[in-house]
Length: 597
Image (cartoon, rainbow, N blue to C red):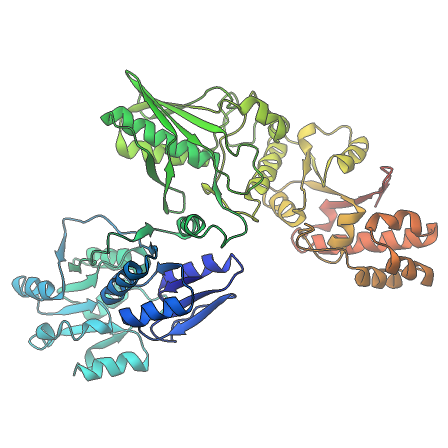
């Protein structure tokens, strides 16, 4: 079992990540006031000392601790570390992202140091944004400086805490959700603000920005140092990866990395080796949402003016053809400015517009280019050539959508998020999006979306004049595909359906995967009645096992009425995400390839 500590933003994030497993876990908060929603977690409240924590973990078979508490919860961090040491338990720390130290800020080791620094700086009027628990810690200051204001949460427990310290209520400000830090500063007009180094999720940046804008001096209490034994992560994906590593059976499916993330890690490892001659076993890098992740490096080779690093692609349990293949990145010094990308062996070349990459360029998508550029530019501001290779790429590309996209000679380096989440089928939906973008870019008047080759073959006869790029497979993602078509402002869309998917869509299921929805015979019997079919038709539906039996078991009159009604229901379901019935054609295809609709 897993035990999560913290009612913070990071605590809620940790609960969401654990909930994804669909298995029980525990999460602990000091009080019950924090709003945390969990489907599978069991909440416990109240503080625990080291002995209480140790006994609780033993009694509840805890194998992993997750510290997602506030960075200034020093006693809790120490208790977790001590308990983990006694029981030989790993601890994952959900850490915040912190801004680098700035010259215009006075940093204080602790609250005693803050009092000393404020006194030396002759601060008379102070706005303390450090929370109600710090009123007692700063008492030696505010007892001698009457113009000290504290902002606290507007709840009774916070008021009771302030009253217990003897702090005057007239100098209390209340936190307002969505309120402006600048408005608070203007209202008080302090000589200085005092805040904690609480990170991005603690609103640190907004407080600093407001004070700077108004010319107010800034004092910051530095965050406490965490135990060195903690395994630090900075977001959802890093947390999940560590849980997967430490408790392999907690999730049914493992998450993975995109080819773009692999190329970023390899590129960074190569440049680091080129700069200092050292070979790394692992490198960290930042994905588009700001989370810092790390990845193992398989091998590195240093040459005269270049270095090559190799990463083995780990897609987790996502059905990715590139899983396990090598992503090789060569980084070379160049006389030009900036970074230029080249496609090596197994990386495709773009031959059609619409992919966001100029025709003739290597198929390295914009998001991976941005990730690589960001990581390398920080290390070296001069010119660099970056060549990405995938030795197996030419063969692997035959099993992808690349030929339809006009990408030749290899695979694409893709991924908008850097990570692959099982069940999300992110890679498949991304492929659909790219195909629709190509369809739009070449000026096709119509997009034809089908579940697979059989339905596509039937509709191609009807629309033989359309280019191959106009035909896109949606798999099970009818809703997602229609949303993309709407976003791309495709003039006309034809939706091709085989009967198995049609009966699910008719009921309103825009994702028709068999793991999520099965044929509902009760619904279909109601459809038959609404369509005016015979009693026999209802009996037939009640006895069938496969949707395709409808074609052979219903007589001609019942089949005609039933299919007309199913198509009408399908159109109404589609209109929820594509509200333009005049631009949408829905076709049903039977086993012989005949079109209805």
